Every structure is written in structure tokens, then in C-alpha cells.
Image (cartoon, rainbow, N blue to C red; front, side):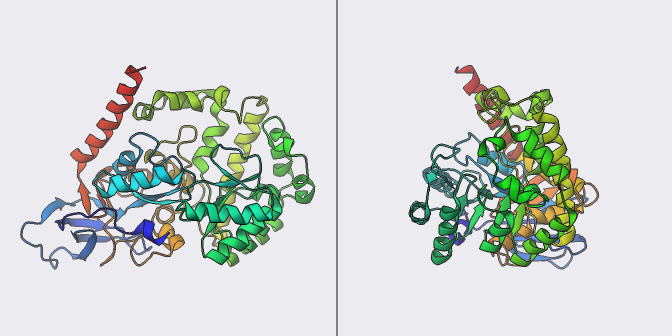
Length: 460
């Protein structure tokens, strides 16, 4: 994984400075006004009061008067890196300087990394490659494992393919999952992802699963009928049976079980990546309002077609009762995030792009807003996309905050995100590994993406 976080491109050792700016360094410290941040190559070489920082001759100056500088943002749950046209450029246009890709075959990842090293605008990429699922995987291109022996082989397979970590998925049998756990630990590689239906959230945490995505399995784990529901027919967790299951989970939620589980997460350092936005989007697919999103113009038209629930195999037989109960579950998940935050459990900001109406780069800002709606302070929400990813990766020395010597992933904002988290969208400039994209350059990335999507549409 560490190699995935090394400098992206051999940038010329250019020097640029943001002067007279308010620095929100990401550590939780109070904002510091009238600061100058000096960047040479890919590193921050000076941070301090503007009157004290000497600017080298020839340095490119960005006037930060009245503006706010934050660390570069991470989207900690994406898919399709290198497969979705202009997705890397859209990340940079939105200040997303790093992504954790949870499922994309490694040839696409490596090709995208190479393109970025050669100058294509794009984020740092940490990638799972192919995910590991049970004998009948949910998604094509998964590595399947029906027993312990195949679970161990699956770890070898994805490691040989170049994956940075192991992504575990929902249909893994118990023996396969725990064999993956054992083999991943033996090889010193992280495993993260869904909580398989055959395993409890508590067991996954105790086993050392580094992160749980989508709050997966947590409502079930907090139910007074957990054991009974866990051993129900798998058909009941598909669309046609989901309303009854979700309704039961909500009705049997137990506060004491939740408190004990969240204390366990904190003790085991089990991170949570809630992906609240995608869960809410999916819960509202039936009302059609999402189809008016102006950001659709940046993406291929066939993606919007795929997002129609009539074309998504997960919802083909969805009963009408599914949507209101899913919406109720979304509200409960926001309450869970509030409780996880209070319990001191580590939280990561992720979007599950490109699931329905999750847009590369853009939706990370939607997720930050939902985290604040769920009880995080704006600083805590920012940290879920900056400092916390650095801690998760064990790379605080290089990433996650604005400090001397760190990699220069920075976002310059026109307004204060601590006053209103929505101000993270008011981007004036982005530094990606020291490479400066001013507002005209960012606009060009957006215009190119829109033009590319239009050309693809006209060609059909």
C-alpha cells in the first residue's frame, strides 16, 4: 500500500506560494490567519506568518487574501478508477487529491497511475483490485472463494495482481472469510470491505477488519434478534425480502447492544466508512428527482441509464414497500454515525462512486455535508476526508494536514468551511502533489469532461 502513496509524477521543481491565507491545517487546531504556504516540487517547504516567509525569486504567487486553505481531500470509497471517462480529472477539479478504490481490476488502476505519473491530472490511488466474494459472486470479475482453501488462494491471487489491500464481500462463507483473515495477516496486508452475511460485525472487528463500509451489518448487530435474523434464508436479504428484514432490524434496535459494539470498534480500531449519500440516493431512486442533477452532464449517458432501478438487477423485483423502509433506515444510519462519533470510532468520508447519482469528485462534498448533518462538526467532517485517511494508511508523516515537509496536496477555498461545510465546493485552486491548478485550469478540466460526455452521446 505504501508505494501507492508515493509522489504521483516527476514534477519539475517549481515553486509556488499561497500568501495571506487562513490555514485550516486539518489537525484540529484553530485556523491561522495571514499565513503563507510555500511549495517546492511536491513538498511544503514553509508555513508561517506571511511577513516571515521569504518568497524565492520567480515563485508563482497565489493571493490567498480572504481565502481558506485546507488539506487535499480523500474519497475513501470509489470504484471504476481508470474506467470512467474523466473521473480522475473530475476528482482534481473538486479538490479530491486521493482515492481508495474498492473494486477495479488492477490493469486499469496501473494504466491510470502511469498516465498520472506522465502528467494526466489525477489523484493518488490506493486500490483493492478485484474484490473477494463467495462461490456465486454478486459482481463479475470478482475472485470467488467457497471454502478456506480457496480463501487463502484468493489472497495470493489478488496480492500477485498488485492489490494494495484485500476487499472482502457479502457472500463469503465463514470458513473462507476467516481463512482470508489468517492469510492476509500472514502476508501483512490489510483487509477491509463488507461484513459477510455469515459473519457478525463484532466478529469482523475482532478479526482485525480495518474498515467496514456502508455501516454494513451494524443494524443487524444491534438487533435483539440478531442471531435469528442472521440465520434466515438469504433470499430475505434480497430486494423482495428486504422490507421485512430492514423493518425488523429497526424495530428491534437495542441501545445497549449498540453501545457495546461501538466500544468494541473503538478498542479494535475498526474504521467506519458510512457512505451516507449513496445509501440515501438508492433509497430515493423511486421518486425520480435525482434525474435532474446538473452534474449528469459530465458523465456518459449510459451511466444514467444504468442508475435507473428498472435496469439494476438489485432492484428489478423491488416491491413498493422497499423504498419507505430504506428511507427510514437512512435516517437511522445518520443516528448511528452520531453515536459512532460520540463513541470515538474512526470515521472516513467515502461516496461509493459510481453507484447511483454519485459523481466522481463532486459527491465527496455531498458526503461531508451529510456527515455534518449526522452530528460531526465541520472540522471533524473535514478530518474524515483528510487527517483520518492519513491515519488509516499510517502516513501522517506525509499526508492529511498542512505542515512543513508534507506532500503538497492542498485546496484553496473562497469561503470558510468551518462556518458552513458546503463551502468546500467553493474552490479557487488545487495543489495535487505540488502541481498547481488555478481556477481557469480547474474550469478546463470540467469543460473537457462535459465536452467528452457530449461527444460520446452524439456518436451514438
